[in-house]
Length: 299
Image (cartoon, rainbow, N blue to C red; front, side, top):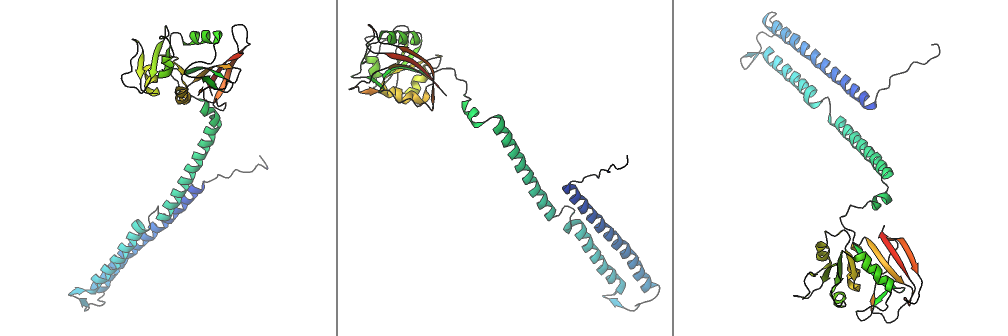
């Protein structure tokens, strides 16, 4: 319709450069072809001039007519021209290749940048950190600790809380319980319906049948690998070694600070652990201290 602008086809810069190089190549070939035609006509003219017209009939070089050397000299110039067209001035010359390489590198960098932005958008770093590999076991620490993280003195508990012992029995029943030698020796006998794993550096450490003895926490975890929820039950040093390996904490927080304790539980870093359950129990005739059952899970 009237007044409607005609759309002009847009040519990519790289395509335009390619066209220009092609046009340059065509001109080079045309000049080479013209040179070849002139060479043929010129050679024919030199032969006729010498043999028919008698021009320079008596002139010879090394026993050959002069036109032979003239034609050879001209042939050398034509070959030089031919070499320049097909070798020296290649269609895709060095400068053009360098430009294309720079362009390709720039495009790849831009593509990588866009992909990185897309990945950052779809999978933020915070989200990626939360993605955990699927594990076959949920290693759990179970402990009772005072407000100052005291857990014992002289290889024994500082308190006796009936509900805490019941909770320990309920949670660990049917599972592997991992402990240090001193913790194991604090039991009158192995706890029923549990697989005991004792960590000790002592050689030939004697234990009752059914008790597993290992030398380090890694071997203890390997021995309990088929248990979906093995428990770490103490003592203080074993807790420290296993904190970075543990998935869950079952804490009985006794609401009192105990002086004179010699064994302590590590500080709980709330940047790593999230409290998921909290049940308070006030003190009564069976419980000298108030306490809370706390559950923490790794973030």
